[in-house]
Length: 424
Image (cartoon, rainbow, N blue to C red; front, side, top):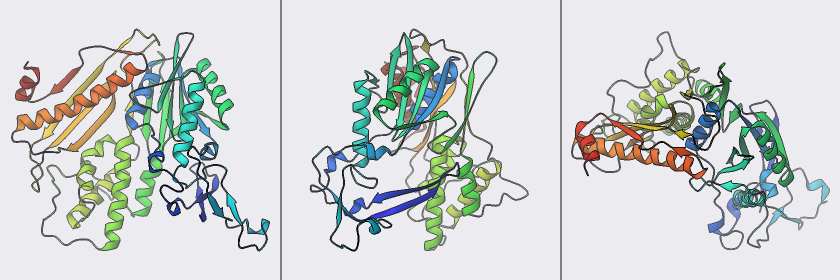
């Protein structure tokens, strides 16, 4: 293989250079096995659930541990033998010999199996230390020390440790024995999100997710100007973006910018801006062939985001939790739908959110996968989607030994759908 250097400036101002192998040059079956290249990461729903637990317990803290050179700490598992040409900047150490190649002792960044090998090493190290893994999310680990629960969430090499300070310190020590780790201190940032944590006099915590770097990216890269009268909503009321509206398609440069800006909004809606979820969903349906009305709607959406840059997702539980395993958590759902809104295919739109102890831990706006024939059927489909999300949160809590108050309540605003749901 050949290699390349990746240079970037991190959000804290630190300059980083990383040598990457060009993994696309590898051959399946010879240099890697296709079945052994995937590595799971946690999801935003799990992160919000564990953050809600942390906010509810006055004794819990949240700290971040970074595994340094994570992929270099994995090991080849299938007997692969890989060689790489001498990287740029290192030829002086090998003279003028053009036939010199280097043997890879570990999966270098960029190789197909690097993420999987590190994930396997992480799981093996955690199992050796008697930590248990959630069956609902394979990237959520937990341990009980002296009757006190503590959690660990992994996103590749970024790990969040949550629990009483004494147990978190034990977890940091265990990780330090298994890997070369760097303790980043209290949780302030995770996967591109800034997280502001605070507690009131009663110990009840509040976590606010914002993404100021991405907001500034929208403002700078796409020259977003808010203007004298900034938008008060992310989209015009009742606006439905369709494909064949008779308008001219965009040129190649505008299409590229449309896709890039929409992708940024899609990332923000998942982590910090649920208020733009429905508007962004409408934009994302037209990534393949956007037209001028789609671009106009996107420009309004970006102006709205920039004008409300301080807005973010707030998690604040409505009661405290003393850490006891007998505590029963309350999960509540609410769903709605927009019947046959899209004139292209007459698909309805499902909307729903699930709250844990009053905190929104999942929220979605999603085009339904099938054509519903009535408002009642569309509302029922939205209810099913939300019920599935409620079951995920339920099973996640149950998998780490916590209890949930049953039955869980799902609210829908259509009597027909409610009667069907309650009909034996």
